[in-house]
Length: 547
Length: 87
Image 1 (cartoon, rainbow over the protein chains, first blue to last red):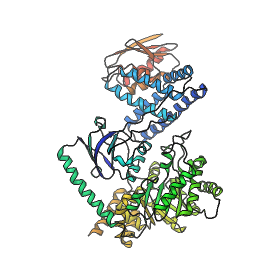
Image 2 (cartoon, helix red, strand yellow):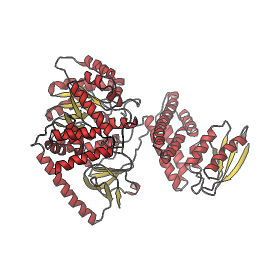
Image 3 (tube, chains in turn purple, blue):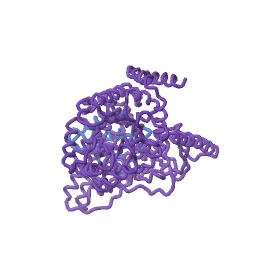
C-alpha cells in the first residue's frame, strides 16, 4: 500500500510501524475537601475550551473551509453541553471528587451510550467527542500518561504528534514519522528536522496501518509504503545506498573547507552535541532551551541548568547562543498551574520564577566560554529593558557579562527594529514566526520562503543591524535552503544558523559564491513582487552559475 | 405541552451538523424542549443527548415542547429540519 504525503524533513527510513495514540490520560479519582473550587474549575475549563475553539473557528472561517467550520461548530456544542455540565457538577458534589475525574467519567458514560449504535457516523462523532474531551482535560491539567517505551527502531505513525509527546520518545529509536496532520512549520516538524528524522505529513488512510507492519518512508520523494513487497524493498535498499553516499561525501569534505561566513548549528537541548561537531558547525547559533524545561517535572534548578550549559561550552568551539525559554501558546509546561496566551520573552517576564534559574545558570557559565543570550518573540524596547533589570539584579560579580541579542520574529519587532537594535549586541532573524506573523497580518504571500515581502524584511533587519554596528544571524528554516544562500550572501547576512545536517550543503554552496554576482541577484530579488518572479530570478542565477 | 412527530429522511439520519443547529436553536427558548426516539425521551438542549439517540434514516422522532408559545418553537425547529432536508 503506497501513499503520498508532503515531505517536511528529508531522508529515507525503513522500520516497523509504531502507532501513536493522540493522548492517554492517567486519572485516579481524588477526594477533595473544597467542592466549590472543583465546580469552578469545570466552568473555567469550559470557558477556556470554548475560547480555544472559537479562535480556531475564526481562523478556519477566514480560509473558507465550510467543512472544518462545521466540525468546530459541533465541537463548540459538545464543550458547552448543559446536560454534561449539570451531571459533572452533580458527581463532584455527591462524590466530593476532583473535577477532572468527574468530567472523564461522565464522558466515558456518553461514549458508552454511543457504542450501542453501530453506525459509521457515530464512529466519527466519537472522535469529535474525544477531541473535545482531551481539550477539556488539558485545561484541567491532568497529567498525560507517558508514551510507550521503545525497545527497537520504529517509524511513528499517527493522526497527529504533539511536540511534547514526540520529545518523550527515545529519539534514537525513532527512524521516521508519518502523520495526517501537521504543516511545514509545525513544532514537531521543526524538531524532526533538527533531529535528522525524516517526516511525512498529510498522509491519509493511516487508521488502517497495523502496529509492527513494515514501513518504508521516502522523505525525498514524499511517499510512504506500508507492508512493501520484495521489489519495493530492493528498490529502497538501492536508494538508501545512493543517499548515504551523497551525505557521506558532503560531510567528509565539510570541516576541511571553511566557508566565507560562519555557519552555526540550531539545537534543542544538549542531546545532539555530537552532530554539531560531526557536521563542523562554527558554534551554536540557536540553543533552544524549551526541551530542558519540557522534559522536566518541575522548574529545572539553576544548578541543573548550569551543568548543561557548562557541558556544552566544554564540547563545542565557537560562540554558543542560548535562547531563553520560549514557551506559551502551543508549548505549555505541565507543571505550570495556568496555561498562558503569552509567548517568548513576554511569558518569561510574566513568570520570573521560570526565567531566574536560567539566567543565574547562564551568568555563572559565562565565565567558561563564549556564551551569548538571545531573547525570543521580542516586541518592544520595554521588554528588553525589563529583562535587563531582572538580569542586573542577578549579576554578582564583574566577570559576569553576556552579550545580549534578540530574535526578530514578530511584526512589532520589525516595526521597531531601529530602536530595538540600539538596545542589543546582535540580532537573530527567526523567519518561521516572522513569516507566520506577516501572513496573519495579510502582508506575506504563499507558504514558502520565496516571498519578496519576507526577503524585504530580512534585508531591512540586516541593514539596520549593520547601521548600528552589530552582527545579524538568520536562524530560521530559510537559512537552511541552499537555493536562497546566494541571496542571503548578497544581502550581507553575517551568520547562518541551521540544523546540523544542513551545514555541509550550505557550506559547500557558500564556498563557491562570487559576492558581486550574488549581490546583483539579491537586489533583483528585492525588486520582485511575487513568489513566481522571485523564483525566476533565482533560476536565472543558478543557471548562470552552473554554465 | 405540545408534541409533534417527524420522519427523518436524510440518509445519514439526524447527523451532527443539523443536530448542533437544532440544539443551538432549542437553547434560545426558555421552554422545556425534549426529543423522543425509540422509547427514550431526552432534552433537546444537549448535543450529547440528541446524538446519543442515534436517529437513523426513516426513523420517526417526536419533539415535546412545554410552556408558552410552543408553536413559535416548533416553527423555528421545523425551519432547520426543512432547510437541511431532514424532513
